[in-house]
Structure formats: structure tokens, C-alpha cells
View (cartoon, rainbow, N blue to C red):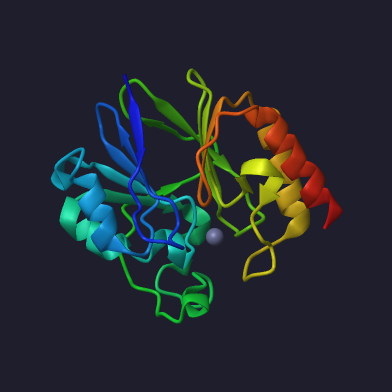
Length: 212
Ligand SMILES: [Zn+2]
């Protein structure tokens, strides 16, 4: 039985998820390593984590990557479209948080259709640009689970498109693709995890995105 725990602990941080499958992984890194590591240790020894998969390069999802990589020894995976954003204050929007973008090594780049086989779960990579150029979602078909990054949030919310690399028509197209999935549980990059009529929530996100 695969478990997912939200392990980010700091307010205003991006959500960090620990997936406990045969190969434990983190989805996103957040920007505050301390509280996140403390939460990870409630479930697992950090050195057991094999991969950190970033949904996108933004600082609130990646800022703690160097510290988490050091603590875990994991490999880091990011969209091939955002490899160049690492260490870039503008592309990573680190400036919005009054910080400088840290540098870290990308071990593997991701693109549409790749599958991360972590044991019971096979996470399919979907390229969902709009909020950022290389935003990704991860979909687990058997369990109907979606890690939606900052593309869609609960209750019809959507990722903003007014930052570097943002593009509203692209976001609409990406959300249109998400409406074709059957999603039972959504793990968004911000806000709360939801299992309540998720397909309808994504439909609402699509309507909202089309209206802006
Ligand atoms: Zn973002």
C-alpha cells in the first residue's frame, strides 16, 4: 500500500510530498529544508529517498533542493525545458521571495510520456506549460492520483501566468488535457489535498483559466 504524506512544514511554502512506495521519492522540495526534513524523519530515514521530482523550477518548489539533496543523496529530476532555469533568479522567480536562486545538479531531465516506475505506482509525466514553461504534472492511472504542481489547485483555482515563462493560452490547453483524466485524488503544489469530486474541480479550473 503506497502512502503519500505532505511533509512541507513551513507556512507559505510550496507543498512537498513524500511518496512511500518501493522507491521512496519526494515531489517538490519547497524552500524551507529544516521543517520538511523534520517531517520526513517521522516516516523514513532521509537517505532512503531515491528521487526528488520537481513539478517546476519556481523557488517555492525548488529553493530547498540543495539541502534536501545533501540530506538524502537522492537524484534530482526536472523538466528538460527548465534545466536552464536552475540558478536563474528570474526564471526561478527567486527574486519574488527576496532570495537568490541556488544552484543544484539536475541528474535527469523529464519530458512528456516518461513513466517513473517507483514500485506499485507508475507516475506518468505530463508536460503542462502555462504557469511556467516546463511545468509538469504526474499522473498515476491505476489509483487515479494527480500531482498537479501549480497548474491547477482545488476549488477551481489555477496557477498564475503573469510571471516569467507564464502563458495563459498554454495553461488553458494544459488544463484541457487534465480534464480528460479521471482523478480521484489531487495533490496540488499549494493548498490542501482533495478527493472531493476532483474532476469537477478541474473543470472549474478550466472555466476560470478561459475567463482570464
Ligand atoms: Zn510556481
